[in-house]
Image (cartoon, rainbow, N blue to C red; front, side):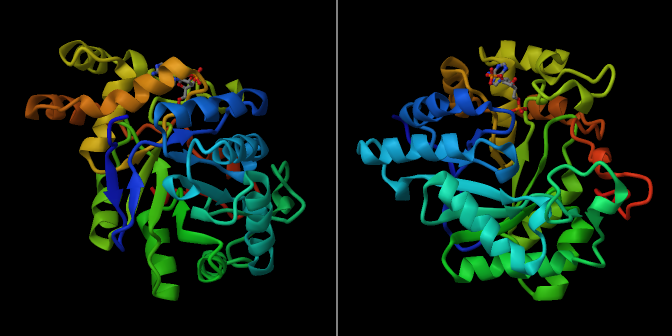
Length: 318
Ligand code: A2P
């Protein structure tokens, strides 16, 4: 197995640059997908409580570790706090449940999934009154509770997801503590250079979600006529030049930018293909062509959190 690219966090700890995404993976297919991925060489797995599949991942990890195929300390496991556990007292129990489901003693990284809070009993709100406002549960309160989980050694690192520069700055100002990671949607149609530059200046790493355009989302989450990254003309041309697949081009671009990337696949062949993206090295011309693709387009536009009467508008502060 070839050594994989790793990226240093603020304190020098190394995270494998390519992780396996698990959003949208069905529980019944994920057990085998995790076994395959680890056997192929994946060492970084990206999870979240709301994906409702952590128990399948936990069973696979336990079986791999028990069989001596992998050591816990060779893996990087990320998970995320769901929006209904943002109150200070709810954070520790939520992480405890995730650890139980994943059959782990600790995480490598725990992220605040969204800068949005729901009432505790609500998984997916249907009405405005099922939300809590950020005045009721400030992001800094949740961030402090995450930091306490790091202190308690339940997770080695803590970070956030879907945070704008403004929101990152607000929790840093409130606590003096900088997140290790911000996981956001990132691909050539949404290159987010200003966010990347800000994060670099603070030594916050970015992880790119939906790097392939997440075409397996439920129809309600898709815009009409949304563009297809995997069939983009420039991406197809670069794939041809590098004798690679379009997915490999898309993944390699993040490695070039020193960002982590978490393509989801439950298919062994595509998992391997994605892991092998590292061999692509872009020329200046390639990079210029990729740069031209930006259109500030989000596949996950966050509008589903904007219900008339709740306090969430423009969650990306654009
Ligand atoms: P599958 O899981 O059957 O491989 P994203 O990571 O942006 O959310 O995209 C995930 C989608 O892309 C899934 O539908 C996944 O299907 C598909 N996918 C993953 N790897 C590849 C690949 N190498 N080529 C084409 N499609 C891929």
